[in-house]
Image (cartoon, rainbow, N blue to C red; front, side, top):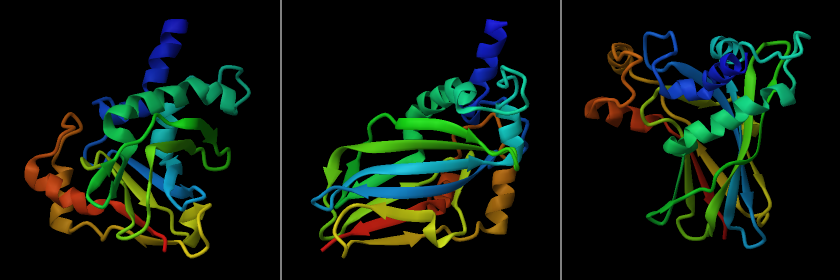
Length: 223
């Protein structure tokens, strides 16, 4: 029983990066995201708080066997091992979060404050986690560019259609967030991506160039 449960846990978000998902085209998983940028007293970017809501199909697949008490609901405690698998497995891909400050690539610490939440009405799972920067990033001058996306487009991450999808905590009142959502994918490019099987994680160079434009960009500037 314990071995079977362990196998089911591995079929969590780690499956994003494997060949188990029964999908036929890129992307294989859809995510609705919210991002909160945290600034310190000096208006430097110190962390990102993110919430990723998974699509219905993948949520149903990932939570199989996790209702351990059989009450038909999924508590935070029951989902805790799966949340651990999520953040551990996505480390190789930098949690699909990238940063740049005046030409310098930013690096992040391992996620903290992470947990999975289940919406009983929709059946969807939401992964909450905080990514702290290894060092605070100054926002003066060109500011800090934060990008949330999967360059290989295995996972399609979209900011929710809500003015509050991207928020800020801390920093000076004059700090500003400029949000740039990706343009719609060209139909021809979408068709090419659809031909890429689930077994291929690394896209060909020509398609990687296309998906590089699918990032959710957040530029943080403070006077």
